[in-house]
Image (cartoon, rainbow, N blue to C red; front, side, top):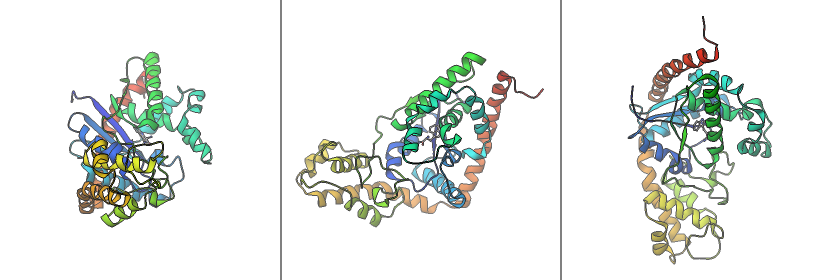
Length: 329
Ligand code: LTN
């Protein structure tokens, strides 16, 4: 077995993947393949904690995996599969659930946000972080690349692993967060004080990873800015322009200072076109690969991945069941 550290992360197959997810996560996932034993999971059981149309869910699962491969995730190196194909996730989630205090789940900010957004509370939405803990622990992952919004869930995962180990012996490694040096935090183009989100009803708030160039240009041109004409970095007073600077910096690798030096006085129109150009350059190879990939091949990648993931998960689950006293005699 490989001695590399193991990395696990997941992405929900809900709607179109946008540049925030690419620049904040996938781009880093691609790099991690070189150094780690990587597992990337399409977490469709998490997706259904909010209502999903069945056909959309099937479609989004394929499209999501296709985007992953198009960005450079290589199924020969990384394990790519869908959560629902591997029943051990749900099984371990139950076993961890009996060790999870209600009070801990009640304090989860994502859960509280969902309720504040008006979603009806359901048991799955409440225990979402327990399923996430199961995703990570089922593979004995050591490292988990997550953004700020998932840190609390990862913290809870660590606590659960420790509680389990204290009670039943040393079974799970305690997973560490992996915060990339270069993760961009991309904000909404329509409201640059909130994160770019695929659940935002306003499609003008985002750029899709596989959007064609004319759409990229249109979205960037219509991005909300302010009325003072200088391009400078000031997230508090100039959230829109600062977001565009972040995006261009992430897309080109150039520093914000460097961009401000070039575009400071060039006017918003010129600057926006430069941002759009940089994004088109970044996204074009990804879009081309995406268009070449065939749905049938993706279905096969997910099936093969699930087979390998299930074998690994089942191997570890035997030990877990035995530790708890739930093994078949
Ligand atoms: N909740 C995460 C997706 C997710 C995940 C995971 C991430 C589900 N299971 C395990 C890391 C590890 C999200 O919405 N970004």
